[in-house]
Structure formats: C-alpha cells, structure tokens
Length: 393
Ligand SMILES: [Zn+2]
Image (cartoon, rainbow, N blue to C red; front, side, top):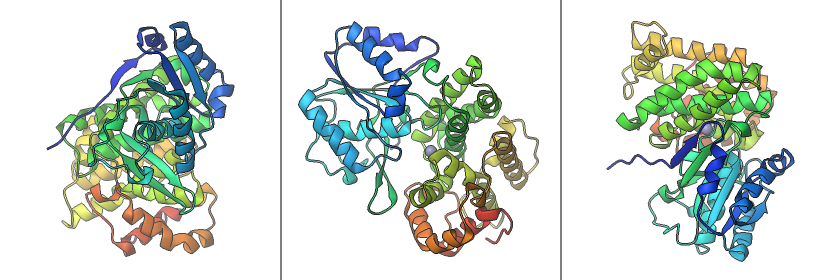
C-alpha cells in the first residue's frame, strides 16, 4: 500500500494574500531571528491581524533545530492555544514548527519517537500552514521532521504522514533577498531531492513526474537565480521547483547522498544542501558501478538523462552524463565539489570516519539506494568524495 500526499499549494506572485481567506482565531508563527530582521515576520503577522487573528511569534529557531527548541516552542503553544501554526522560514523553521505542533497536540509523545507508523491524531487543536523563505528543502510539502540531537551529534530523521502541512504558500517575494550562497545551497538540495526521488528504490509512478520536472527546472533556473537575485522569473521557478521536488521525494524517498550528507553535516556542520549535493555525483557513480556488476537493483539514469536532454546510449553512460552535469552546475554556482573544498582537513575526516560511516549507514534514507554500501564501501565513498581522486569501490 502506497500513498501520495500533498498540502494545498498556493503559488506565484501575491500568493500571501491567501491569508485573507484563512478561517481561525489564533495563529502561532514559528520562525528565526533573521527572518524577523528581514521584515517577513511582521508582514505575515500584520496580514493575519488584518483578518482578525490574535498572533504569537516564536522567533528563536536555530539552524539544525534541537529537540529542546521543539519542546520550548510547544510549551508556549500550550499557553497560547493557537488554531493555526504558521511555519515561516527555511527547512529548520518549518521542521521545528512541525515538531512543536506534534508536541502541542500530543504532549505525551517523545519527540525522538515520532514515526510514520504510530497514529498521532493531529488537527484536534490546530492546522498547519507553511511559508518557505528558501527554495530547497521542500519541507512545506513533506511530512518529514529533521531535528538534531546535540548530545549525540547526529540528525534525527523523524516524521508522520499527519505532520504534512495543510497549506503551503509559495510567494516568491519571500525569497528575493536570499543571499547567493543560500540560494545555491538550498537550490542544490532541491536538485538532490529530485534526482534521489527519481533514482531510489522507492520511486513510483506518482513521484517520478514531479521529480523529473523539478530537476529540469533547477538545471535551467538555479544559475540565473544565483547570479541575479532580482531575477523574478528565476526566483519564482526555483521556488516552485523546490516544492515540486518536495512532492516528488516526499512521496518516494531521498537516498544515499542524503544519508552521507546528514552524517557529514551532523559532525562538521556543513549546511544541509551543500552536504547532500556534494555527495550526489559520487553516489550516482557508485550506484551505476553496482548496476554494471549486476550487484544491485537496476538504476534508471537513462530516463533522467533523456528528460534532461543529455544524449546517451547506455545506462552507465547516462549515469556519467548526469554526474558530469551536476558537477558542471556546482562549478557554475561556486559550490565545493569535494569534502576538502568544504575546508575539512583530511586528518579530521579520518578521525571522525567511524562515526561518519556508522551514521551514514544507519540513516534511514540510505536503505532506499539501489546499491547499499557495506562499511568498507561507505568508507571508500567518503574517501573518494574527500578529494575526488581515487575511485575504489
Ligand atoms: Zn535535503
């Protein structure tokens, strides 16, 4: 039994005016200090107040939000008793808001135990509206919740289908001021979602279409959005692409590049999109080699390459073409293409290798890969991605 889930999606210029139709009394905005400084929080707050809402704001979500932050926000929600939760920000704010929402509705639930199997019974107290201010995570259209365990230095991939937002508002005016580095990192996250959603074992008829379209949009519009932040068309297309990629991988899965990226980010604090996209071409090469050896589930890079207008005759050639196109895009965006280029010393990588291999292997995205590395192969993949020099897997 499979599902396709999505919120109602409001997109395009002026889509924030959707708030004029929102029915309710008390809204609780979850965001971070930067978004507040940019004036986005005030804009949303005023729009809600204009239609009669009482509004409370929690603006202390940190990058890689912790379980403690989720608990703190939920405690304030319990006092304020909102009937709408508004997640406003990047993936961190949206994920923190979802976790707070779960704990507000279900104070008895252990946040580390939020899982897709157990029924939560959300929406007895509030519904959830997401307004992303980056174009990448797709958190506005997935039910995933990524929190960080500070003590264990690892990311916790949690989620429940009930934690899917009810409404996502994709208003490009919220991303026009995104700095180029964030534009590149988050845009590459969207590309990784699209490609992993399409090439992992859980890909399916419903998710394939959104994944392909999102990949195409990112290749076409991300370089423009990066070079000129005022390019409204590129910003709008990338904002749509990130959400469409979210619809794709959210109903399929991310995969090995996310497993490895989560591990690297948990230890070395490399931003999520930069970390996962760094691994993407290496992982494609790894999976394609497994395919050539007949050692794993079959890949379908050929379909992807065909859709992206990359001429190729065979599956290995298609994988090589897709990996090369990703590396070319990384170059155009001044993205690091190796772990070394992220400023991580080889000695530090080797020192943390045991933890990296364990966390990447145990990450619940890794299991959907068409080729799942054993511990030796995982180590070799990290070593290959360190400098891009020696393929040994
Ligand atoms: Zn991601």
